[in-house]
Length: 88
Image (spheres, rainbow, N blue to C red):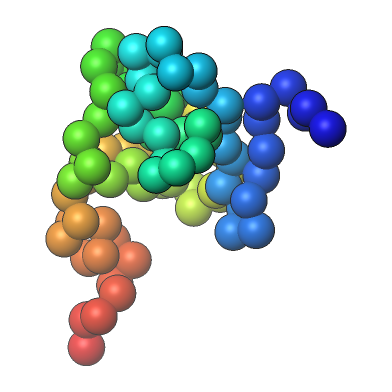
């Protein structure tokens, strides 16, 4: 049941099918052929695959709003601070 290579997971994130010969195939989830759309949008904008430690944050916190102006790259600590995870 092909859906055009675009699916939404149970957490509300959009995933995009990426072929083996795609330059962004290295960003696929382990054992899968899919990449998170928000990560792919930023990677294409930068012209390079993202590293695993580069986190992409949805500024408006809408997980399927993957417009480049709504995406911000940060490290894990900055992302945790932004969401106030693990902070007293």
